[in-house]
Image (cartoon, rainbow, N blue to C red):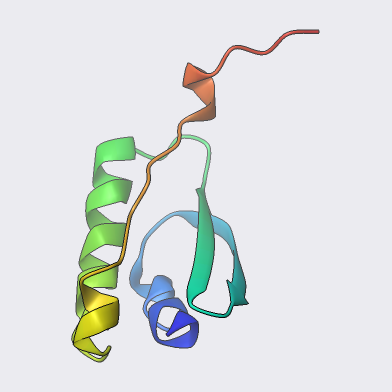
Length: 79
């Protein structure tokens, strides 16, 4: 499952890095975009790539994919 989604990531523009962690019945893929990337465009491109990957996944998996957008600029930093 993880590999099928990772294989679609090169089609997404402005990715600076990504990493995956897989375990029994769960996979987490974290994607980081280049600094000045338009957030809405990046999210749309990523969602499209994941939707394309879903076509090759079992139905049980397709129905349980969650895309969570996190913007660290929205999180306060305390020093």
